[in-house]
Structure formats: structure tokens, C-alpha cells
Length: 546
Image (cartoon, rainbow, N blue to C red; front, top):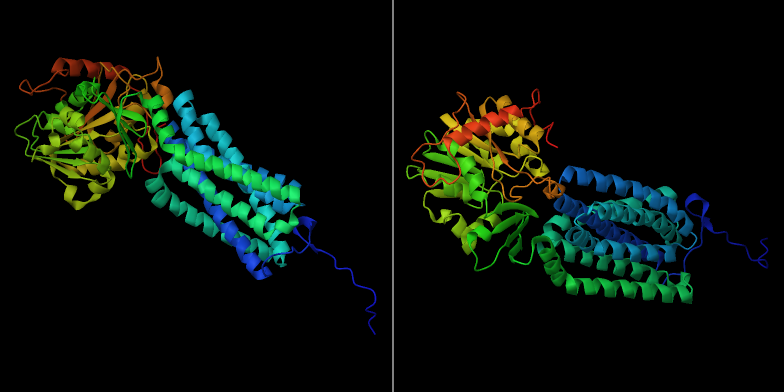
């Protein structure tokens, strides 16, 4: 017979690594509580990945070289997650309070990280230390989540450790998928980086704090409950204030970056477009920035575009292809020739084309090129367009007016494969002119472009153009734009399939201000003195530009 006079002692079930987990007194059934914890894991994982992607995007945008910034953010964050998992051991005996504190800190730091990075870039001119600091701190907090949630889910619904880990990681990975898709397709295009990060932090604070303060409130002392309520309310007030002030902050920070004459600032699906200059000023005062890099300066752009376009126009030029150049300035130079029958501009960003058509100052600077019936536009990636059968054997001249090769997204457009496709698009006797970055300050990059053209079966004539007054078409690292290091020239390569092309311009070339045959030949001789021999070509699997 069982003696029922002595109550049995119920021992707590062992939790992770031997930590006892006493069943929680829940306001819901255990199965419902388990689902709520897993839903919280899902939301927190989505928010965590948004913070990570936002750091990656801003690091690439503000600093340049997306491969390097991605490597820094990911490696630092993954390492920090391991550190956070170890530090979470100290919080496992008070898992509910610890988890709520971690989520409040994560919501605040993650939500404000975009503003903080942009502020350091705008007013300090350097975002690398802040990028590393935010990557590490956010990684530590994300790493602390899973160990604490493991303890909480065991307290809600006892199950073997393997099953609990499987459930947690399944919810975590699915949440990461949703966050990863929401960032480029919803948050970035609709809300932008600053507001998108702040609203993500708000969701993080509400879900993380709400779970603990409602479902695990009996695990908290009155003092802890009051403290968590005060902390979460403070976080939400700070984030709400950031949302309200985001537009004003962005305007002030943009003025600090670009100066006080910002006329147009829009975010396209590809990049940020900013036009500066007095609204009633001359087109010479116009500056066009793409993702923070000066791409057109009205003071000296004609030197660049004349040197790029006109040497290639010596010979047959009835059909011309411009790769990039959505601002219409290279097309302006081509359309000076009355015997040009058609010009095709292949531009990835329709926002640049729209701006070049509609902005009065930019339209005046490009000579209203988009109103010329000979000009047609294709808004597509240049690499993919050249692969189409429609591009083959069509053009007398190809003008490659693309960003510098050191910018990671442009690397494939300076590859042997790309130049092979461009050569295939040329008619017999056709020529291709390539912008290859500054020769004097980055000779290795320049001669790698030239070696890559030769590897694609083209004969080359290297040259450069001086008289550079601005940072126009600056390189990938904004640090290169400082005093004493700003590029002083533009480097070009003229290439053809059949023979080495002659560097000259015809005497009757209309409207030239800065280019002549003697100047081109002198520039070619100077370029040869800087040649770096033996450089391998850049290919898609092995890019050589740094």
C-alpha cells in the first residue's frame, strides 16, 4: 500500500547544461506558451537579420568595396555571436529578465545603428570604427538570445534537449529567411535604411518585452517588472522620436556630406541619386552623386567625356553603343556628329535616365540629348544585354562609360568575359573606348584593365586626360578623395579587334574644347612610362581589382 501521508518531492527537470528548469506558472496552456516562444524566436531572428543586412548595405554604401565590408561585418558578427552565447551563461538563472534586457538593448542599438553610422560618416568622415563596434555589439546580443530562449522554452513545455534545439533553430532560420527577404523588397525601397532600421527595432522591443512581461511576469519580482517596463518604454520613446526626426536628420546629415545646395535627393531601386548646385545657377555648378560618390562635376566633366568619346569616333561611327552613361553626357558628345544614325544607351538605373531627362540643369548640361530622336535607351544590366543575340555585330563604336573598376559591383563590367562580349558586338573595323580609372594614382588597376582587354583579343592604345579639377568619377574608397590623394587625371583605353587603333581626332570634329591629336599622342607616351608589365587579366571567377 502506498503511504499518501508524506507528499513526494518533485525535482525540477534538468535544463541545458544542468541548469534546473522549474515549470513556469503561465497565463496560457503549455502548448500555447511554446508556440508563443517559437513565434518570438521567429520575429527576433527576422529583426536580427535585418540589422545584419542594414550594416552590410550601409558599410558598402558609406565606405565602399562591398566585398571587404561584407567580410568585416559577417566575420565580426559571427565571432560576437559566439561571445554572446558564452556570456548568456551568467543570465540563465534569471532567463526571463535576461532575455527581456537583451531584447531591449538589441532593439535600441539595432534600431539606431543606421542613423549612428550615417552620422559618423557625415560629421566625422569615417564610419569603419562605428561599423565594427555595432557589428560586434549587435552580434553579442543576437548570440545571447538562443541560450536564454532554450531555457524559457524548457520551462514552458518539457521536452528532450534535441527536440527543443530543433524547434528553436527551425523558427530561427525561417525568421531569418523572412527578414532577409523583407529588407531588400519592403524595408529598403518603401521605408529607406534609417526608418526601416528604427521600425525593426520597435518590433523587436514590443515582441521581446511583451513576451516576458506578459507570459513570464510571475517569474519576475515587482522591482524587475517595473524596471523592464521603464526600460522598454524608454526604448520605444527613443525609437518613436527617431522615426519622427528621421527626415530632418537625413536632411541635416546630407547637407553635412554634400553641402548646403542639395536640390534633388532620391533613392532609386539601384542607388541614391543626389544633385547639388544653386537652383538658378549655371550647369557648371552642378554635381551629381551616385551612392555618395561624385560622378559628374559641371566644372570639368567635358574634359572626361571629350577624351572618352572622340578618339573612338575617328572612323565609321553610324551606330554607337554607350554602356552606362545614363546622365546623357557621353551621348551628348556622340550626337555632335550629324552622320551618326543611332545611339543606344544601356543604363542599369532608370532613375538616372529619368533625372537626365527631367532636371533642367542636368538636361541643359547634356544638351537635351534624350530629346534627340536618334537616341534610344535600354534599362538593363550591360553584361546581360551584351549576351543577347540582338547585340551581336551591330556597332561601329562602343563607349564604356562605367564606374571605376575598383568598385565591387563594377568588377564584372571590367572582366575578360565582358570585353569578349563587347568585342563580339563590334562590326568589322569597330572600336571600343573604356574608362579605366585614374592612371597616376592607381596604375596597377589601370594596367589590369588594359591587360584584360588584350586577353579578350583586342588591340589596345592606352592614354589619359589631365586637367582634373574635382573628384569626379572618384575611386571606390572615399579616403582617396582627401587632399593630396585625389586623382589628378582620367585613364582610358581605346581598343579594336583588327589592329591597334590610332589615337587622333579629326580636324572637323565639332565643338572640342580640351582634346587634340598632339595632346592624345603625348598622353599615350606618358602612359607607356607607367606601364606595369606582366599583370594577369581580371575574370569573373578571379577578379583582380583592389
